[in-house]
Length: 190
Image 1 (cartoon, rainbow, N blue to C red):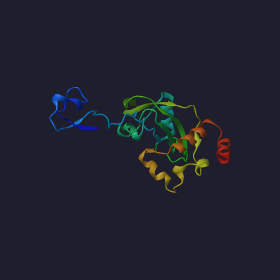
Image 2: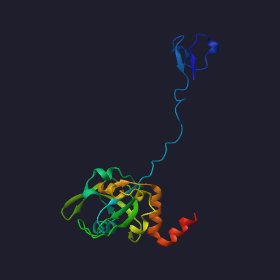
Image 3: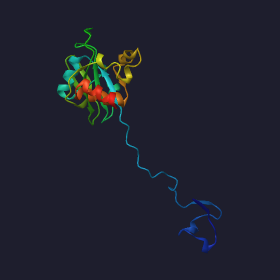
Image 4: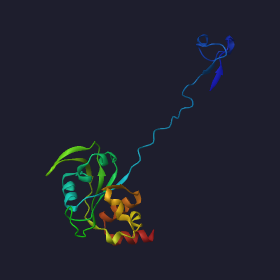
């Protein structure tokens, strides 16, 4: 809201009229056009990380995650409260044993990435509250997950950490916390 300052005494809607130049535009309420809405909460993201089952099991046991051989940069993308699911193509790193299972699901805790000791040096980690869920083979879920609809879905996983849909995360959480066939029936009826 703006008014022209005036030299008329009876037209003074504000107390310090004498401090304004005649004819100058004056903003009575400088913050009138600023939004008073609360800031929107940070959007939660959902991530699919890739590591051997052996490595994921160590992280679950000790309450942490690490990706891409302990690099810090990918972990900086993950925020507190984000959901994380691990997919393990093999039991041991470098083997082609056809394991192909989801091996962990949880939520990232507060805190920045930190250096942790590994057998061959140090690696960056983030703390995670892992859910008590069994490992689940991927094959029975192929037609049920959005990220596997593309025939080359596995190609994306070579990066070690990819963002994926909330619907896939919630479906995996439901599957890992109950029986697969019960969940499939419930989803078909919905």
